[in-house]
Image 1 (cartoon, rainbow, N blue to C red):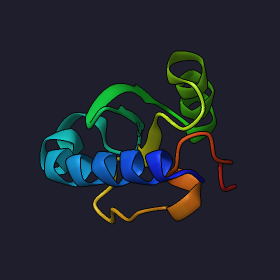
Image 2 (image 1 turned 45 degrees about the horizontal axis):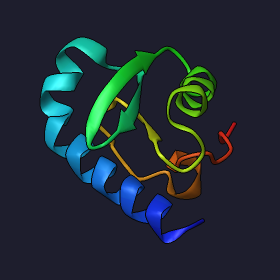
Image 3 (image 1 turned 90 degrees about the horizontal axis):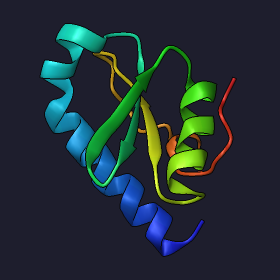
Length: 86
């Protein structure tokens, strides 16, 4: 993973945590496709979010985070262009 991927993911995660209370009201249980510290879209499953992230932003330029009260960084699996943990 490049330094750009790490910093993009960290910035996205920080932004996601700040937005989480409002996101939970409408998008609980969905997966947020994050890019540039903003939510680009929401998906019902992480695989669809990863595919769309690759199409829109390319490898290394996005992250995916589940909208849930028990927010946590999924490490490599939340990072841009990474695999989706099953």
